[in-house]
Structures are given as structure tokens and as C-alpha cells.
Length: 351
Image 1 (cartoon, rainbow, N blue to C red):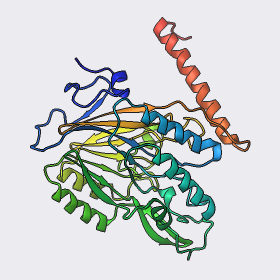
Image 2: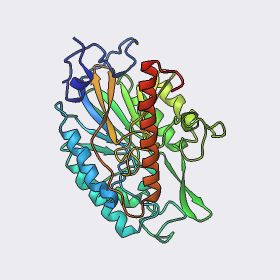
Image 3: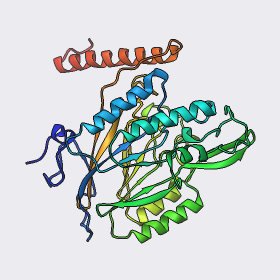
Image 4: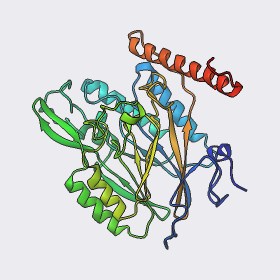
């Protein structure tokens, strides 16, 4: 019998059902299976934690960790999608160090291995708003990598017959105001990726990036003037990356950065953006998706997933006037949607 959505979330164990679970997304289910030794296991994708004491974000992150630990079928590991701590670009070095500590403390509580991915807010001082000198020895990615024991900003590993690749989408450049970044994978990393995937030939593969290859903000917001290749929300070398992923028949690219669930499929590759663990930076869900994460399940060479919210109410600071306005606007929109739904179902035209 197929499993229900509730059964999956609460831990339908590996191999319990081969059929596609209702409500799940399934990658390459209709394609011929390759000869691999791939097994059955689950993992989770957590992204955009922005861990900080502000708005009790550190408490909220522990709530997310509790949700993951409560899954009846324990995930084998967690892929962390970037923007781990809040916020190296414009906080003081001492504050950023504390936020990294809080992120590590919470993540260690998962009780499973976790693999970090670099986010734009994880780089110390990569902004004109920096609060460190441009010649600080820890500027850029070094500080968070040192504190988390993170040897290389892009890397790969294997688990259960599957191959996993963690990419670094924060491409360092020297701007007019000092060190900063562009949203790119870059030629050196793409070359590494191509040979890494070549060496893993025959293994079903999942990759993860912070900044997305695909993010449809313009269409979502109905903005005809919004450029598809926006300067900050998507990778500038998406096409070059995509051709490598397609050539090696990668199953999925997991994405973050937009704080909004998005799912696209192109040329056999799924592009999946998880909800932000922090929602709207610990100030509700008005940006698009409530706080949550994604559970992935590998069976043989098939990949299925379920987006999982967890309960969290925002704890706003006194100065959070914009956030209060956004929450009120979201609540008014949700209420109007409920009213219109009742009208539509009752057939009350014009009401």
C-alpha cells in the first residue's frame, strides 16, 4: 500500500514501499535504473538558518533541530544549505563568532553528521557594510571555516551507494570598496565538479548550492520588469553549471537563498529550493514559505522528498516595524483568501 504524507513525515522507513508516496515529488521514477549498489536511507536539507539571538533565532533553530530529531526514521545526515550564522557581512567579528558558536551548538544537537555549504552571509566582511578592516586576516570564508573545522569550501562524499556534492556559490572578487563576491560557481570549481562527477560515474548523485541556479522571483511576484538573471538571486553561470549537471545525469540540485519553496525540472535534473529554517529571518513566514526543511529519501537510485514545516511563532524586537507591517499584510491576505474560498465553494458570485 502507498504511504500517506503523514506516514512519510513521521518516518516511513526505507524500503517500506516502492510506490510513489502521495504528496511526494519523485525524481527520475520513470527512467531506466542504472546498475549501482545504492541502498535506502533518508537525509535532510536545512538551509538559511541565520542563527542569532535576535528574535530568539537561536531558540528557533533548536526547535528545528528537535523537529528533525523527532522524525521516526532517523536521517543518515544533514546537508546544510548555507547562511548558517547571521551575519558575517555586516556584524562585528565578535558577534559573528558568537553566532557561529550558536549554529554549531544547535547543529551538533542533531545527533547525525552534517555537511556545511557556504552562504553569502557566512563570509566575514564581504560587503561595503563590513565592520572589520579590509586587511583582517579572517576576512571572507576563513573565519567560519576555521571555527567549524571545514577544510574546503566545495567537496564531495559518498553514502549508501549515492554521491553528494557540496558547491560554493560565493565567488570572491575585489570590489571598489574592498573584498566582496559574485554569485558564481566559477571555472576552476566547475572543472573540479566535472572530474568529480566523472569519477563517481554510475552512482546516483545529488548536489547542493546556496545561491540557486533557478529562482523565479519575477514571475512569482508578477513583476514584468524583474530580470531572470537578477544580480543577486541566481548564479551568473547557471548555464555553464547546468550543462555539467546534465552531462553527468545528476538527480537533483538542492538550493537555498530565496527563503521560498521552489521546484523546477529541466533536462532530467530537479532544481529544488527548500524553505528557510528561519522563515523570514525569524520574523514569520511573509516572505513566502513558513519555517521548515526538506526530508529526502533514497531508495535504490530513486529520490523522493517532502517539505516539512515546524511550529515557530516570531518573537519580534521593539524596532521591527517593517516586520510587523509585513506580518499584518500576510495575515490580511490569508484571511481574504479564506473568505474568497468560502465564496467560491458556496457559488456566491460577486460577493
